[in-house]
Image (cartoon, rainbow, N blue to C red; front, side, top):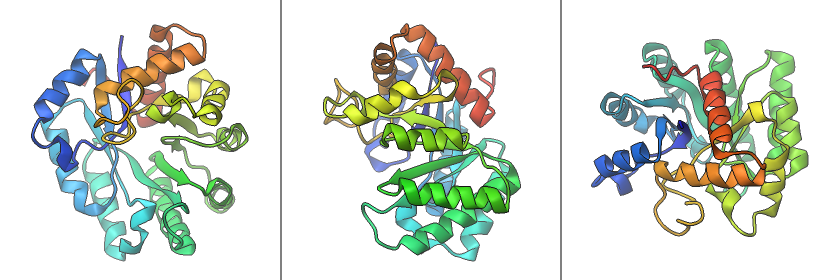
Length: 261
């Protein structure tokens, strides 16, 4: 069996002291590849160094919506330079809208639009963070489609309703579920997870955050994506091996990954 964790942040300080142990854990859990997301440009070189260290790690470059105030023309050039110069950059992001924690709505939209242009220019998928802003995000992406053309990507750590899920499925997006889907009170997310087609489903940890049951409350790590897969397999009434095979194939398709490398 092969699993891919499509959203990690193992560059965070909480992993610094035992990263080799963390690697052993994900290998034991049959996690064969990681896609490392990015919050802001100051992380670029550190994430690149992790890709040098771990041959089964690809990464994204971008600016998180909660850091939208850090956007400059230099940010755009940094994203472009890294994405063009390193073949391990497989996506732009994470980008998006977060109206739960910040009220700079227009600034976030402007930064999102700028990164959509970069992704479209480079023909790379996007990693989307969306919190309390599904309608506004849909509007921005639909407008971009009409003005520039389609973009492909993933709604990461998805927590939307089935109706909102369908919006983004109709726009061609993949939907990725984190450990939150395993929480007892996550009925809406579980309902959404039931309607995602097999060929659009992805799994992730978003580590070090949001550890799944039975690890809830502890530091999350890539190995725990197996618990997400096990839960989703039961929820969708398929064998674990089937769900693992499908989500791994989906990740390879979206991010142009080759597991032979």
